[in-house]
Amino acid sequence: MTATEAAVRELTYTGAFNEAMFQLMREDEDIFVAGEDVGKQGGVFGSFSGLHAEFGDMRAVDTPIAEQAIVGLGIGAAVAGLRPVVDLMFMDFIMVAMDQIANQAAKLKYMFGGKAELPLTITTNGGAGLSAAAQHSQSLEAMLCHVPGLKVVMPSSPYDLKGLLVSCVRENNPTILVKNKLMFGVSGPVPEELYEIPLGVGNVVREGDDVTIVAYSRMVSESMKAADKLAEEGINCEIVDPRTVQPLDTDIIVTSAKKTNRVVVVHEAVRFGGLGAEIAAQVQEEAFDYLDAPVARVAAPFSPIPFSPGLEGHYVPNAKRIADGIRETLGRPAPGA
Image 1 (cartoon, rainbow, N blue to C red):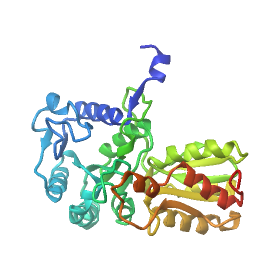
Image 2: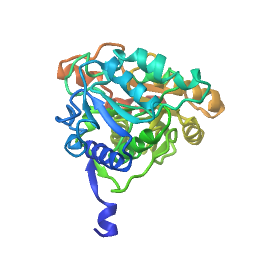
Image 3: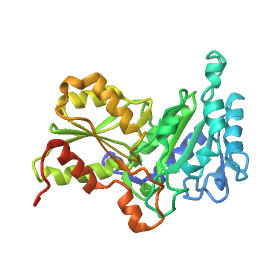
Image 4: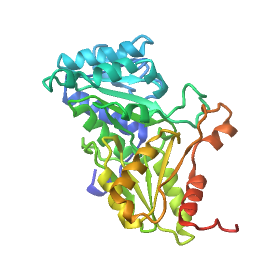
């Protein structure tokens, strides 16, 4: 393979995750995966496909339908010196395991005065758009980010997914990596070798000087579509992807806010109590004198996620709603209005 071919090699979002798992498990025999259907079936979404065939029952472990036990298994294995990756099939199911996640995994290092290590990675799948209804479509990252001791990652591209997964698995503290279900088939350039994207370091996805859009996970691609549309109207958007939502790269967001003087935060989770509120608070604390308008939020309404595809389409933020929010922040009317 030539250098040019390697540079443009593309994988899907799922393929990037799967490749990283193979490479990590070949590199370190202490790494294993456990969860519902992650063994012979390779995971309900195919993320762990092929691992069982190469690594066997002891390193690609099918578990009972018991999320609290799955996370508890991971905590015990991590404390004992292994490096587990445990999978919770849907992000909604973290609620079943929240005691293990929030009261055990997140607090263990603190309770032992920093002497204990907990190299545990929890992977899960979040987001709406598949008509999976109210119990299988949520974005609950704000709940996780509220718990000291957890690191929470929400990749927006195949490249970021591979690099962030590697960092999570090599991290000696509990991490939670949330994939977005609607992105499984999205393709993008991914290097073949293992590489790390540091946790807590954001990325300026698009340069601009009129308004800052802060978005993560699938909302980055929707924000890019909105930015492309707004560029036709002479509005230049800067898009900042935190990549890691806990710890949050406040510096990259504030630097952009000081440059553009306006900020719109976009996330798929419900607006009330979402990360948009925390980001808005941090921007006004660090860059209040630079703002020419209040920090705006584009997010889901305060409602369970509907099953109906038509209603779900209105529920989830999209490029049109993002563009409308930006125009409102800039005081610009929509074309034809």
